[in-house]
Length: 224
Image 1 (cartoon, one colour):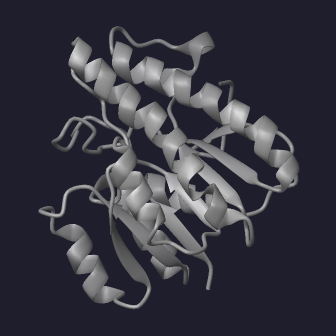
Image 2 (cartoon, rainbow, N blue to C red):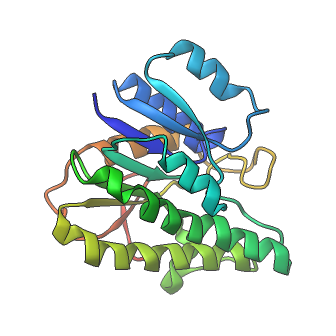
C-alpha cells in the first residue's frame, strides 16, 4: 500500500484530498491542526486501518519534527495547509510562516522518509503567486507567500529532480474553502471538485516529469 501525508486536512481541499486518497487505496497520514473540528474523526471511523491522524502545525518546527518522528516511509507528500492572513504585519507574517516556510520545513523534515517508493512532492499553490499575471488588489501576505512558495518549489526541483523526485504544482481554482476561518460562499468550485482533479494529477505519471509546470483544476498550464 502506498503512503501519503497531506497537510491541512481538517476541512476544505485538504480534507477532501484525504478522502480521495483513501478511496484510491492509499494509507493516509492526515495533518490535523484543529482536533476540535470533527470531520477527521468521522473519516477515521470509516477508514480506521488506512487513516492515521497526525497532530501537525506546519508553522511550528517542533510540531513538524514530532510528526516526522511518527512516520517511517512516505511515497508522496502533499502540502495543502494554507491561510489567507489578515492585512496587517502579524497576518502577513502568519501567511509566510504557514504558506511558504511551512512547505519548506515539511519537505526538509520528511525527505529522509521518501528515499524509496514514488518520491513525489505535491504543492497546492495559487495564481495569486504568479507575478506576470497577478491581478489582485491587496492581499500582500497571501500573494507574496505564494510567490515565495513557487520560487522555493523551483529551487527544490533543481536539487531533487536529479535524485528521482517528481513534482506537482497545483492551482486549485477559486474554491469555496475556509481560508479565512469560515467557508467562502463566493468561489467557483466546491472543495470536492478541486480535490478530485488534484488527486488525478498527483497520482498519475506524466511524460514531462523533467519540466516543472503549474496546472489548475481544469488541467490547464499556467506560467508561474
